Image 1: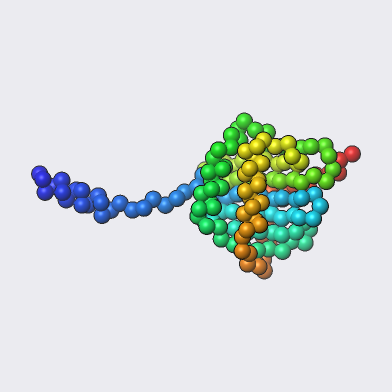
Image 2 (image 1 turned 180 degrees about the vertical axis):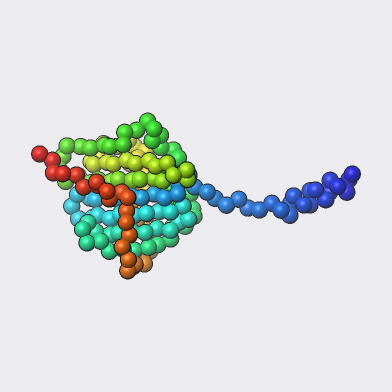
Length: 162
């Protein structure tokens, strides 16, 4: 009996493998426009692959890799946001405001989408958007000779405020 227990313990200890980190999102698709000069779209995949379309109308495309620690950080911020308690749109009736749109695709293919025009979003959303902008500003980009489609660009640009 004692030998069986020792054999079982050895078997279990030899077969334990390190758990692979699985974020609570498959993809984060994000578009930002400053209202004046800066405009870009960005996709972040759960494996850290990042694709960027830089510019408003004539986009240039880039790729980069986000370290797993940053993926975990984004996942942590994402899971703290009570999306079900938030509106899907936050708009100020003031011209030339910055705007953001994020579409998050979850592992079960459910999606979360939020559009913000101006500065009236809840603090947790603003923190999430700030981190997305920070990621874009700190990545080392590699130019891509391809076109990338961004879900967050669909219906992103609002008609002029009258």
